[in-house]
Amino acid sequence: MLHGLYGEDGTIQGLLELLKVKYVGCRVLASSVCMDKVYTKIVFEKAKIPQAKYVYIKSKDSNFYYIDNEFNESKLNLNEITERIEKVLGFPVFVKPSNSGSSVGIKKAVNKQELFQAIMYASQFDNKILIEEEIIGREVECAVLGVDDVKATCVGEILPAEDFYTFDAKYKNADSKVVIPAKIEKEKQEEIKKLAIKAFKAVDGKGLSRVDFFIKPDGKVYINEINTLPGFTKISMYPKLWESEGLNYSNLLDKLIELAY
Ligand SMILES: Nc1ncnc2c1ncn2[C@@H]1O[C@H](COP(=O)(O)OP(=O)(O)O)[C@@H](O)[C@H]1O
Ligand SMILES: [Mg+2]
Image 1: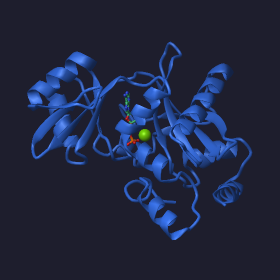
Image 2 (image 1 turned 90 degrees about the vertical axis):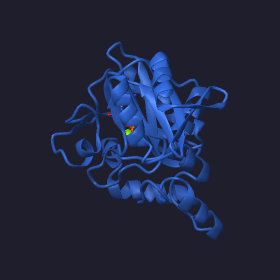
Image 3 (image 1 turned 180 degrees about the horizontal axis):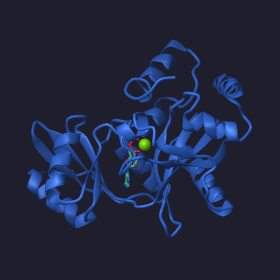
Image 4 (image 1 turned 45 degrees about the horizontal axis):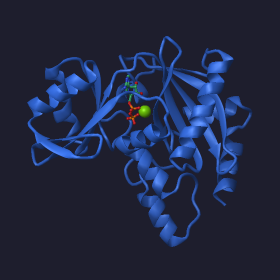
């Protein structure tokens, strides 16, 4: 299994297409759309899947550009950018490199000063930067599998050991826990499963993906992102979700390879 840059972003998928080698999972388009958080959000918007409000900016040679709803770019200084973001989203916000993963480059900002720093930090990882309103709620994930007939698992919950699911909370802090199935009511599970399949189809997903959500205390569900090549160790959420549905690791691999063919 591959991850991140060159593994999950459509590049190796394109290489395999050229070589006419069969491969598991999403093809070029879905892989690259889901690797780019801004473009994923544009597709979710079109599909009317609820998500955090956002804006995005570009950085180039120490200049910053604010991108409006029609993709027009205005060159602004960082002070003007942060002011505009505050006006549109308020605080706190999450600042993310559009192309990254494993929470690398992501910071939460609660005021203009922190926003300023978070943008500078994120711009080290990508020149496209996404800024989102904070969604306060539970973090849950759903595994989908299939090509034409797409199935979704029950929902699993993440209990991060830190303020949010940072790199350290994901990979280093043993106090981060997952709960499968998440302790949420049946109807909510069903609602999230349907949304996961809808989102997967909206990005033209194939094979597998893990679709991540937030549930606010009032029950409203927001999509966060789609991971087209989710973590795949024996203790990762994706295989564990399928295991809870009665499909063990080995049979899951068989199924994925069969779907690739
Ligand atoms: N809008 C948001 N509101 C609240 N928490 C968020 C928001 N966006 C991200 N997070 C937190 O940051 C973590 C990493 O963000 P995510 O967009 O999933 O990036 P990655 O692709 O690196 O996993 C999430 O798992 C969640 O804990
Ligand atoms: Mg994530």
